[in-house]
Amino acid sequence: MRKFLVVLDDSRECLNAIRFATLRAAHTGGGVQVLAVIPPEEFQHWIGVADIMRAEARERIEAHYAVFAKWMRDRHGIEPELVIREGEPVDEILSQIAEDAEIGVLVLGAGTDKKGPGPLVTQLSRNSGTLPIPITIVPGELSKDRLTEIS
Image 1 (cartoon, rainbow, N blue to C red):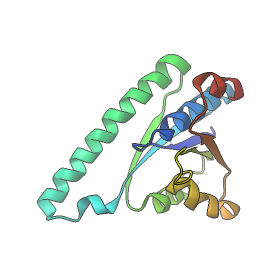
Image 2: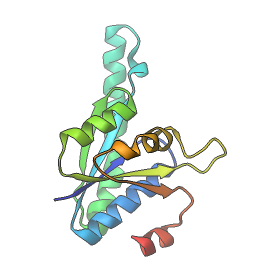
Image 3: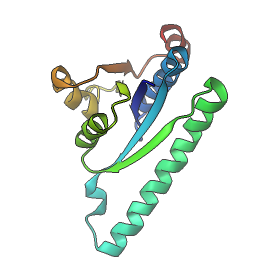
C-alpha cells in the first residue's frame, strides 16, 4: 500500500498537509503515516531532566496525533500510523523515507507569512531532485472546501 508521509508539528500549515494527505489516501486506497520529530536541542540538559522532557514531548505528540487520528478514522476511514523520531527534522524525514519503502509521497504544508514557506519546505525542496519520492506542497491558505475539491 502506498503511504502519504506527513509531518506533524506545531505549525498552522501542518493542518492542511494532514487534511490533504488524508483525502488523497482515502481517494486512492492509500495510507497515511504521520511523522513527528523531536529536535535534539530540546534535550541538552542533565540526563534526568532530558528524560522527563523527552517523555513530555512524546505525550504532547501523542495527544496532538490522537485528535487527527480520530478525524481520519471517523470521517475518512483511514487508520493512520504514528512514527516518532528524535534528531534533526530534515535528516529524520529523509531517514524515514529511506527506511519505509511503502512511502510514496511526502506531503508538506507551506507557511503563509513573509518569512517564506517554512524551514522544512525550504530545505527539502533544495533536495527534491535527488529524493526517491515526490513532494506535494500544500499551501497553508487553502480552505477546507478547496482542499476537498482538489483531493
